[in-house]
Length: 172
Image (cartoon, rainbow, N blue to C red; front, side, top):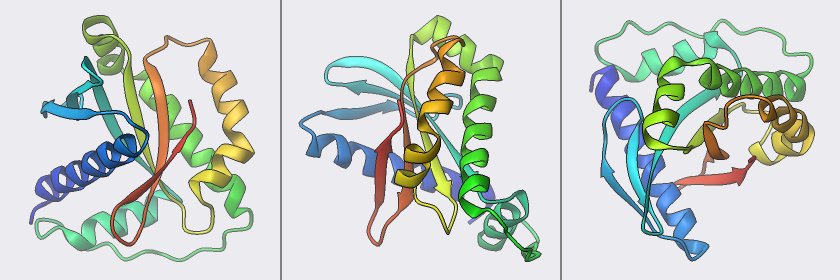
């Protein structure tokens, strides 16, 4: 599979897991279409909305290694190991940066204007810190930072891979 096909399969997997998560809470999510951006136009409990999916890796080096290893159209870039002195703090900072970048994107602001508020799903690829710990440690400060920005997202969830799907933790 090439990089785009892997990315699309990853997004479909996350959307399927998110729909299962919401079903367990008595909600119903139906994917209507998959433009880009956003990653999905959805119907949630009978109301049209949209979802954007992004990932926060512990480091850019690790992200390149993981994504290049799986794609047949990319040369694998091995991870250059390094000492991580404050893994929790670093993980929280990566998640914060990724979320704030979405608020800066003109495409996200355009979606707010044309489609209303959406949902942001952030993969926390931080091997030493879980999404639950990130929300506990830095959730309040992230919410405070985005409070003064355009309210692009009505909900933000962090997720991580599990053995069979993904586990979601609400941030906003």
